[in-house]
Image (cartoon, rainbow, N blue to C red):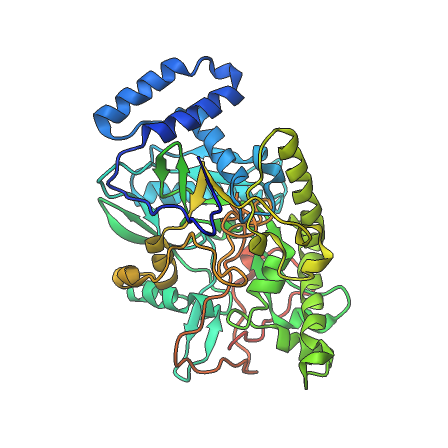
Length: 477
């Protein structure tokens, strides 16, 4: 299904009470069976699906249909630069899971498989794109969901003076998790719990085990002081609040990941003024002249910050890509799709990297603006839950999440393999992919600062060994 000009005609909002549109189901099934001759004739299958929709308002995908639909959804993710590898997406059929405990156990397995920590024949850091598809939504019935934007996200703690330790984007979500009983360590890289909601059990919080959270301590190839900043980042960007839509069937719980593109960490998560805001810190340590913008101190500090990310991941043996390589790969993907007779939907504002955009090939061209299904969607209520961590803000969401924000994106979806389906990889929300982008500061917030007093380093047991890892200094704002 294609809607030309998605900027002018954003996708219709999802109505959870509406039955499946048979026309959309038929279009998907004809595409699926046409591309997979081993499945046989599509006509008998269409008759079965039509009867199922008439009787129940929906239908059930076969495992082959589910796997094909999830991969095509990544291929259609207009905000993801890493779609060259869409066929390699590992699709895990988790549709039998019902309880929060079952769902969480499978999420842990997902992260271990994606991060390379689940198999003896794979080294930790051999990231692969994975999606876990949980039960579909039934028309008119409540459904299971994850509140978090990503399976792994760092907490943000506001102090009495208005400063923040950790990720400012996560302050409101962190406060809601603490209201629900979670108690974090108060560190700058404190992994948030996973909030899983099911119709029968409500919302429950689960702490990710250390084996599921692969992290890389950040150092620099030339500057020894960089390691003393105590920075690190997790290796698997897994988007968890986007809705997978295949042939008219909706899967609100379908977390997916790719691997990171370096700029997602170095030019967004660690650099944005309303995230970790490390550019001024790095500039000061470099001794740069920050008296005026024209000295380009921000640009110079940003380059070194991104060099540190790429070098640290490579040294640790964790898969990551750079924005120049991924730009070339995306243009190769477009050529492949053209040969196959398909248009490649793309949102320029997301495809062009947030650093040195004009030096990449993806900058210098226009793209096919269309919403093509199967695909991933971020619903307004899911976005509100991901930001606030409670339902009080659901009715106050001011715009559909599918509409492209002005300027740079505010929440990339998944890493470069998926440099975000919602963002730079996702299959990367990402759709396998990347860290979320900046969240606008609230009205009346105090300016953030970076104090100098040290705080105890987080437990290093889930962090990849590093000869330069030293006690962390505070990352506060």
